[in-house]
Length: 320
View 1 (cartoon, rainbow, N blue to C red):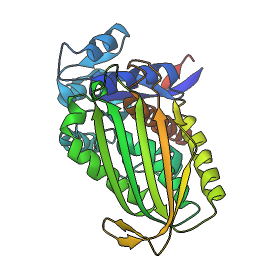
View 2 (view 1 turned 120 degrees about the vertical axis):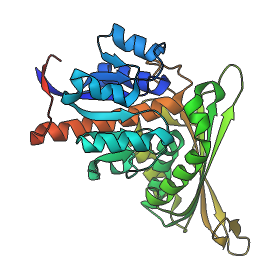
View 3 (view 1 turned 45 degrees about the vertical axis):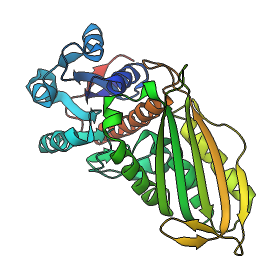
């Protein structure tokens, strides 16, 4: 027998449904309490009901009316940046831990491989799919050298970009840029997302360009390889597509870096691939899988902390 913490998921679309399945299959300290949506006909709500999870199609107002809400300690918000502000205000008033999968960025950015164990805020933000995939690489370079500039390009299958993703493109680029600087350690960051309409849909691919001070390339490569292993611990489909590439940018021929100007140093190029676990979404939707996997890792750690401290308000003994 083990103690588990009840959670609710707001957003019954692709991300929310995939996260629900991950919680039920792989959650070490989590138990599904409720699935919340606004479309009574959504597949996510129907699937949750079949699995015996309490549901409501009345959004967060409906969640508050569910009997199980009094036992919910953690809420994952998989809706939109615009909706999250109200959700967070209500949930904070009830003392509920919030894990934000939207680009709202009300709380601090969290990427499990970088700062999960150090963050204890009552609202944490999972950055973006591109950020979860690429910022660990920037941080890996920052561990061994000062990073002047980092640019990431996230290419995802158009079919894996739902209405929420498409409505939040501007927030995606700005949120990711900020996290490149605050979590990745870059003086200046830039983020680009590409929705690839190719058929059959292509797997998520990410490119990371980093300009840092000169340092032994072996140190950079080792740090990146260690970081990849850290991410793979919760996203098994995360991998380097090819060996890390290096270019020496000499002072005589500097790069014109946006926001910085002429700069020289070591240019590191990293090419990544993210294959989804296909729990609910197709395997090519690694962009969604990395978000739900990262959120699950955060939820499990927060739940364990609450159980260890005797703070979980609704846990009960449940069979493994």
